[in-house]
Length: 404
Length: 126
Image (tube, rainbow over all chains, first blue to last red; front, side):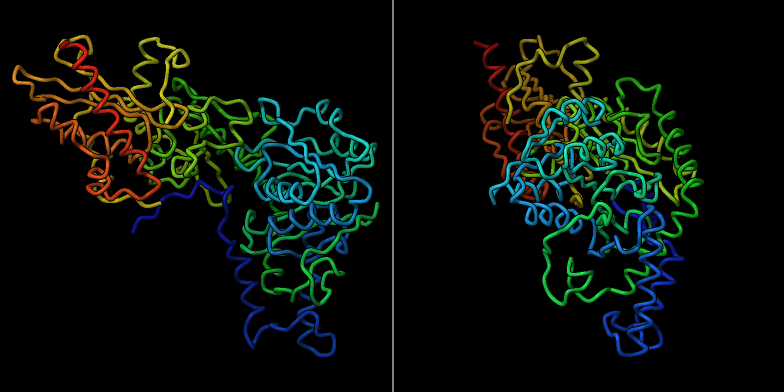
């Protein structure tokens, strides 16, 4: 079977063969399968050594101390641990949290849960380009604000927030700053030794490591304390109990080490591919890039082909695996909340496609995708009553639609 | 989500795509849905002197199931009287295309579209 070309690297990535090879050494009897918490024998020591090395590899990529890295099951757990951990530990100091409407659901739904527990959360609107309005943020900080949580790079539109500026404001106001960096780590420079960030969430599977593996950076200077969310044997300095998954941890470490070595070259290469993809569409009528094109991660292109519904376009270009902001499959029929928060019209949000290129994308993949998309957009526009209306000069906003 | 064979067939080879003269006295036009909801259907029917639908055309903005539902409907209404066409139920479309629950609204929209086209035509006749 001919498999589709993968252009959905923001969803997940394949494990790098170098990573998989290393992971396989930590599973079987012949390998280092031990429990890192077994302090009394060889098998435990071997596992502990592997875990320590991986912890250093993760810390190295982001300019952190290895003691600041806490292993988790992924960025979702890291986000939960950071936000609930701060809220539960510092609730006597205040009960107000600030975040952005375009955050990942792992942040938004965690905040919703805290609201049910008596915390107050402000969900800020981003600017039209997807970036945080700094003045707006400053004005939202109150006496009782304990935490601000903003993602480094947005998963749908790839825009990059200014962590330095936001972090400085947090420090001035004694507000803890948590950053979901699942989409940025290994793709753009992060130096936690200089960045004013207290907590940062990482995922392994977004940068060619295994799924089900992540980490949370917890700053030691200034010291940040967390209420554990997972209780048990007191692993990870009491912040996250559970026997360490050595093979997963080793995989994440190796993936992060490879990213450190190859990041610069790789981001230049993916930027060229992204640009090539964009150039292939830029002369088409009624095509809009969603989110800021300059303050943006190299591999992401989120683009709306107006008057063509995203899901039907994905179906038409089934030879290329991408994702869409259309939510025709969801019960609510609501399009992407991220694109809506940018102020996009519903039809533009419904018409969006997210291409994300990565380590194994070739120029030929990009050229084939361009040709396929152009052909199918034309076909679907021929089928679209909205395209007819646009061509007849009818303003769709002036039409009385019967919402259903 | 994987699509059913019949949906794919109609989606890849849509029947009766096009436009009829909406001002003609024997043409009824039904436009239903909203861009905000992600689907808009325009269904047009043309009747002969005996009141039988002799031509049907559609254009649809929407997901594959919405396109397939309207394509199927244009096939079904041809040769039917207006009364017969108005009897078509969305559940028949669901059964024929094997639509999953999340796509039932597409069939509802198609039923609305033929009803709207018939209403439009009857207005012209009276």
